[in-house]
Amino acid sequence: MSSSFRFGVGDASANPTTALLLSIVQESTGRIATIIFADRVGTALEPECKMYRLAADVFNDAAMMLDCLSPALSRGPRVLLLSSSSMLRALCGVAAGSSKASLSAHFAKWGNLGELNAKDSSQETVISLMGMLAGSVVVSYVSSPMTTWTCLILLLSIHLAMNRAAVRSVSMHSLNRQRANLVLSTYLDQGRILDPKEVAVQERIFEWDGVLRWRGSSPFAAAKIGLNLRALLASLGPAQSRTGSIRDAEARLAKLIPVYTQEDFLVWYDAPKRLGHIILKEGAAAKSQLKAWALMLCIAHRHHAAGQGDAISAGFEANQEVHRTTLQQVSSWWPGCVEQLRTAGWEVDTASLETRSGSRIRLDAAIGR
Image 1 (spheres, rainbow, N blue to C red):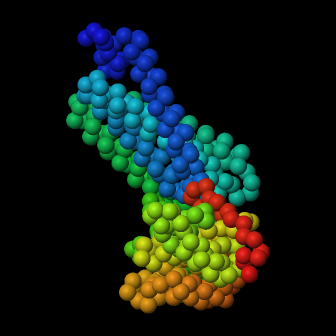
Image 2 (image 1 turned 180 degrees about the vertical axis):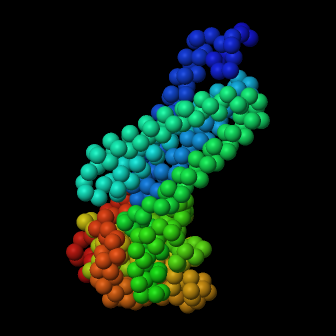
């Protein structure tokens, strides 16, 4: 390979073939990133649309920074940098497009989604034109690298700050995991339901997936919803190292199932690991999923308040009794809570708790008795 071989970026002597190869590498990297990203987080894009809307801007601005850095690097690192930039732009496209669809549906109060999208596109066109005009004026005063980087960092900071403020101002009416934590814990503490505007002020834009908080406190546990039965069995009892047998777990599951005969879910909280497992039965509606999350929040908070050394976390039977009594308590106030949620403007019939493709189980009637 001759020393004149270049990759076509930042080099006047680059040949067309290598420039084409670089373009192919970038395009391929971006497309692969799109497929993987959509597969991994596709389910979470709607319930967490505010987070991914801002994340799209972060991806885009980071890609712009990498593009600006690329001329300063040698051939090999430059290719890696530009490929990373292409990946970030691909992630931006997926996150921005999907979250925008959810936000557009939220703002289309009278079913005028087409009109809203048309006006939004016109608004983006006007803003782009204004940006081009302003850039034409600014670029004549920017000549040195220091001035260029100062302007770039300043403008990107303003861009992210404005988008963060815009995202925080949106009051979603669906109950995702974080909003469910805030609303339900406040209801249990104060006996009132926070409306969407109150929750929008308190909620975090970027939140750890599945964490349990009590009125915005530090995370004290985590929960997963829509798991398969094998995950529950692994939590109920570890498999034998040699045979892989989970006989003890199966016996415990047989004791746990009758607790939830009247429910569309199974819930189990692993106190030592501070991890909750929610298994949904076939046909579990959005309200049942929300009730399962409320039950998990109450059980985990009860364990947290009592402390890990308390008797309630000492063994399976004691923990099972906690689940049974807490379920009775939750069932007593749940119907009234649902009505208050509706009155406050929450969409309790919209399922927004699962952030990954979940599983459903079917229990034989004889087993559930």
